[in-house]
Image (cartoon, rainbow over all chains, first blue to last red; front, side):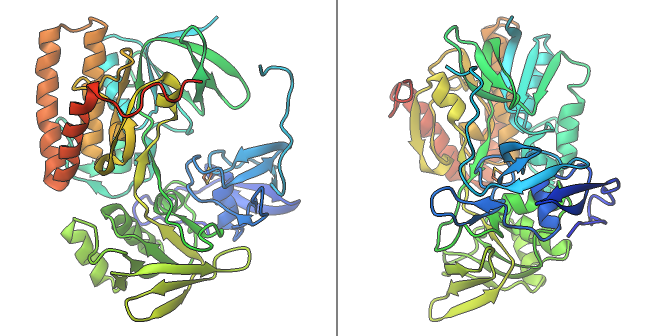
Length: 107
Length: 364
Ligand code: FES
């Protein structure tokens, strides 16, 4: 659930954005991260673990645990607790090992 | 062409920002690298009042302190690389910085590592279920993202931080069903906050631990082992307060030596009174130099800043020594007030400077 009136910080959410999770539209507010916006919409399961395929969701909310990896606008393995939700964003759960892109820049 | 800077500060939290002020206000050009979209580190979502701060700071709420720290840098030679992180070192010593899409070298005369701390998990069966998050994550969701992460919660752990966040969660309408503490008493040292917690009617269980969590796809129930019985709470949120450990990858990559101090969060880079590591151009600040309170974190940032100014000959040795010893005195007062054992561990750690447990372990 979105916190419209925060007891200390007041009203901070104003501009809504529509984003898509598994092709379904959801409403979020500008400034929220993708993982937080999903949680506000009651979606906690963001993907499956790589080996045992167990459900995974946001854990640390600060980019450390990598438990919130998702596919965002076609890019795999995005830490959704660090990036902000944007209008029209397309988000999918990470259900298996993402392919590692290799465009020849690595050693 | 490599980006160049006098001082690279890795981490734009309170320690990094405090160091940046010491450096930039004396004319040095500073570059701050941070993964987050905003400067201020964990302060950004802290609505609790932070009381003991070094001079010249007054008690204020965390987010206001973050604003104050960034505001005084506004007119100074400070470059922010937000949404960026250090990912390695080039052969010539330049730091590799990535913005997720591109990597580029950044050449600095000195480096301050102010990477902060990460929260530890509290393992029990099924602790990885969605809906089970760190206490810091809960605070981030309510105060940074303005999202209520659940309706019915159990808090596992009872540090000052956990009690603060439990009260903040209750304030935004989360029903806190219990605070569970493994030890025989609550760990929070702020008596006022503990009284507030008790007044709010939130049950607190000591000598208690989580037996297991259950749920299909997300947490739905949690079993709590009390001394004589097990109780089951129906929850959609569990917040884990497992303490914090210094974030050290940057120090591994830079080749610093390491020691171990339980009270400071475990493994941490060796440093001396200058907060200088045995890699002479690398300095430390904040929780990366040992887990402590916000006031101490700021003081270490100031000490590291002064030491780098001395190393770059912006201030003389005598002046640096005078500033540093005043800051260390202040740090001692701040740290011994609440956590005397942490201060003792810090002194032991500095005594071990020439005697690291791990040296050049991480260089491949
Ligand atoms: S929740 Fe831990 S990295 Fe995103």
